[in-house]
Image (tube, rainbow, N blue to C red; front, side, top):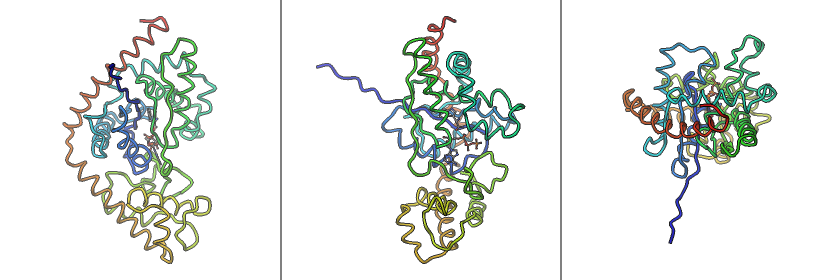
Length: 333
Ligand code: ATP
Ligand code: LTN
């Protein structure tokens, strides 16, 4: 009897080494990835060419790429199961991005990207072309590896949808070269909000670092950030996104980093005030960070560099094969 060859679905995702990774990045992205490793073939990238859409200090950028790799490892990404690599180590990413800029992406698509509008603000005319075209590079990342699933936080949904459109458009013209990817977003925790303003997403590039808890924050600093987090008016601990967005955000963080689900927490805090709630939440966050940092501190920079070197070879092999097909299809190379 013929044995069926089992092919697992491919997952691709990445994070920019552009600042201190925070619990929003962990909850929205990395925590999903860890669980996917058993079922899928996973590829996780440290996307440094995305980081340079905003000016970076060269030494800092190099250091942060290693830091993000160590964070992946500490969070439980297993290099035996998954490919971990740095985007700039595989030249195919920028090469494909150029081709997709010509044959796939349209100005009208990019004009709809809300992240560009948010990030460029009033300075759209002076923003770099890289910042504007960055979703095309993201599409290239995904399409190079035939990724079917892209696990990200809510803010990246629009970019993955663009990658789908680009893949379909290219395939329509040149044949079935790319797999059309699908976005996967957590049900809870897809958008962790700032601790200082519950209408804004917790962000690593926010000028006020009190907006977020970073994964490598000093434990006592993290505790203070929670105690100072804004809450809504009223006295009851309730999950109500419309009327109590700040508290609902804190409840989400509490449930995901702790062991009790939101309805249970609401029940347990009935009759108690915000002060008690925040003190306990700070304990949960501190425990999470302590465990995380214990793992992180055991990983050396050299370990990370070895893993990136290995990942580079594995990723390049896949990406280069895809590029052969793409070049042939469009008549270059
Ligand atoms: P920046 O704010 O500097 O743009 P970022 O914090 O959004 O950076 P990215 O590298 O752009 O970080 O995102 C990495 C991953 O983390 C993406 O999948 C993104 O959707 C997710 N993510 C980022 N912020 C949050 C958040 N507040 N809640 C949930 N997921 C998030
Ligand atoms: N643009 C993403 C990071 C990113 C990404 C990707 C995520 C770059 N390439 C490919 C998923 C798949 C962001 O979070 N800013």
